[in-house]
Image 1 (spheres, rainbow, N blue to C red):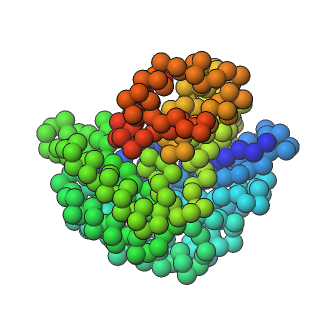
Image 2 (spheres, helix red, strand yellow; image 1 turned 180 degrees about the vertical axis):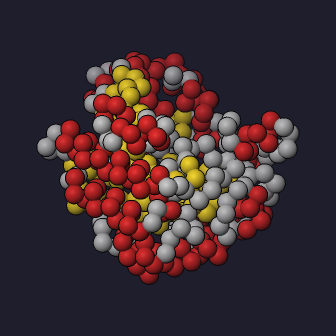
Length: 376
């Protein structure tokens, strides 16, 4: 059996104004947290069937690279010691500019990491400051230089649009600058102002405003056109890659394949159930990797839930859903289960049905959330 693995490192140098992820300031708890995570790794590996192989790994956060080299070394060593990795296993680590250095790169190059996802968001320093980022574009450039000096990793960078006061010209300049670095992968996300974030608080007080829907769509369409012209293939709503360089770990999520999440607040989909881990760091550390104490069952994935998730997550991919695979997986045709919404969206031109595949049209990409919700 093949599965994906996610490891959550919750520590950050600072909290970005838009971030609603489970993240904490760097603290003295880092060492005890990694010790507890390694114990969870050991106990998880012993609980898996002997034929389990790892097809993808993603170390995310937070910012994993705020950890000092000796803790990164301990984590990498535990992963390779306790899990059986496929020879082609994709192994990604997240990082932010300013958190990479020569010592950390010396650690990384010892292990079969294949990919890095480097936060950027914008090439404009004033805009970075406005959204709570503490790095500069120059530090991003230095990170790219370090990565290429020490590794042959594939590089992804994250960009954001629809930021407060961001202009179309600024976003265009960011795209034009980033593609000159010939990265393998680019992720492009629209800002969503979430409750519980600094932006959420300011929005409630009327201190910031969302950009107009018209400008939001102009920016998205600009990214689609520009990246396509530069040789990137859009394979998911927010992701573009050079041919053959898709993020395999994220595809595990979108295809509802099994994965385990380890670490604070991490989520899993395994053996027909969804789980989530303890979200209080003190309690997580106290449990010392005891799966029975830190892992909670969120829900049993019934056939109804499994079909819903398979459809709305599968439609995130531009290749869409193969109706033959749906029937093989669930023992019934997709038309038997979802005839009404499928016919509606196809009639309106938001979904396309062709060669046994169902996928979003260009217009469907713009209103995808409405389409997804109709299958729930």
